[in-house]
Every structure is written in structure tokens, then in C-alpha cells.
Image (cartoon, rainbow, N blue to C red; front, side, top):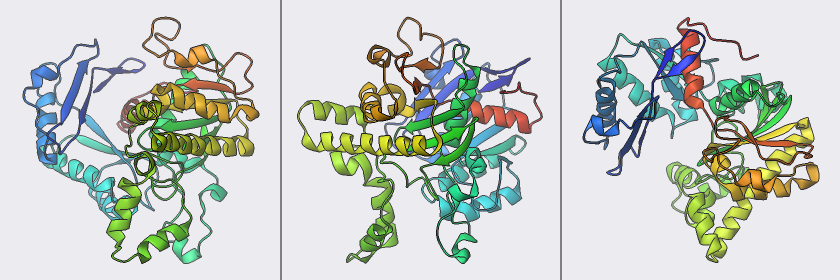
Length: 392
């Protein structure tokens, strides 16, 4: 939860509700002073979307919170016709329902939440912030698929995702006091979902994800880019259906398919214990990311590479292995800096942007946390008419 301050948005409370639909659902809730407030909410039940929404309403009813003036929602895919972030009107909602075909695994849950919250508190202004908007600056040659015109007319193109994350990296890099802003930057968002994005002058010019978040580099349960013939082959297998293939590609592939689990921490532990399948999964993953970064460096050059996301920010070994594969392109890590964490005491204690490359590395390498919530809050404030400081 944010409040508009004199010159900057202020964080009032931060929280996260995990494992909705599971008995293991857990709530994290803290004040801006770091006080843990989860116990004040009472019993945590979020076995359904209805229960999860009820839980959020209990949070908002806590002393000191108060009803929000506006709410922003992260929506993965806007479909073929919406451009830019949007105030949620009946017309926009109808277009989002039509866009479900582009993101059947992501958008339905978001729409269910939005519509239920609108019923419960209809007077609150609501906005959709899309993961694709940051990539609207990509040139046409980076978005077009070599498919017939009638297919492209249906909105089949490369949209790109993780845009709010990438935008937050650009925002933080512009505000970093100790470094010059890198004109040519490659952002590696590595988590359960993974993508690599090339930016020039802070704007997206290319990215690995395409029509959906399934393509690009290898991910936790998604395979990344495939020969289209693989999908046709899978569909021809006896007993195959569109639904079974979709499930295979989105939930049963990637690191999970290669190493048996999709958690990089567990894969690292298994690999250290001699598990050959875990080692292969890690090698395939790191090669996939390094290959994407190398391609963008070859096309656009790079003054900096930025790692973000759960793996990118926290997995020391993945960063080291990816950087080692890029050594021929002028990437050299400072191994001691790479081992430090943001919460460790010392020079990185406060600054969110930390350099992990050696001083003489031609390409600088940084670790920066993804701040998607902040970007949503900034966009909502802008659409509500609240003045925000320039990023320049």
C-alpha cells in the first residue's frame, strides 16, 4: 500500500499472499517500519479466490489502513487492441475477456479477482497495469512473426512480458547515485518465469518472450523457444489434446522436466550431491540465458547486464556461470562482490543497485531487485492525476 507524498510515493505497508488455493496459504504483512503485522489478521484461509479476497479485505480493515482511493492490478496480457495501462471500465473489461485466449493461464484469475473486488467495493477506482506495455517501444522488426498477413491481423505478434520488472530496473538504474546510467543494457529477469530484454536509452528494443510467456529462455516449468514442429509432433501423439499439450508446455517442462524439480535452490543442492539430472538442468538453463544475452550484446552492444528476479537476485552460482559463459564478450565478475547479498553489512546495505563485475570489466554487471509493485503504484498515481517526479 502506497501513499502519495510531497515528491514521491511512500510505502505504508507491504505484503504478499502466497499459495492461494492451497492449505499452505501464507500471508506476509509488514509496516513501513518493518513491523510484522500478519498475526493481527487472524486465521489465514485462502483456499479459494473468494477466501483470498475476504482476507485482503480484513487486512484493509486493520487499524491504520483505511480504504484505498485507487487499486492497481498486474495483468499479464492486454490482448491485441489495448495499448498502455488502462482504467478498468466495462469496455476495457470486455476487451480483457476477449484477450484471455492470449494468456489462458494468467488472465482468468486476474479477471476473477478484479470483478469480485469491483462488486464488493464499486466506488474505488481500479486500473490494469500490463506486463507488455514497456515493450511497446520495440521496433516492428522485433515484434513481427513471419506468418501470413491474415494471422498477424488477429494480433499474433511478439508482445514481450516482465515489462513492469524491466521498467523498475530502468527506474532504479536512473536513480542510482554512484553509477552513470547505462545507455545499452541487457536485463535478465530470472525466476520461475524468465526473460531477457535489451534496452537502449532506457527503452525496450528486443526481448525473448513472444506472443505468450511460454517462449524465450528455459524457465521453471516452461521450455522456452521450441521448433514449432515439436508442438505439432506432440499434438499428433495418440491421446493428445490441446489441453494436454498446453499443460505439458506450461507446467511440466523446463527445469522441472530436466531435473525433476523447478526450484533452483533444490536443484543446486541435488547437483552438489552428485545428481546428474540436476546438473544437466542447471547447465541447460545457464546456457539458455547466456545465449540470449550474447545475442542481444551482438545486436545492440551492452554497457551493462542486470540480473533480477528470484534466481537473478539470489542465486550466486547461476550469475557466476552465466557470466563465465559471456567472458569472451567482455564480462568479468568480481567474485567477492558476487557473493555479497544486499542485506549483508557493508557498501551494499542501502543501495538497491549493486555492482558485481570487476572494475576493469568492459561490460558492467549489476544485481537489482524487481520492484513491480512500485511501478504499478506510480502508474496508478499518474492515471489518478497525482504528480510524480521525472525519471530523467
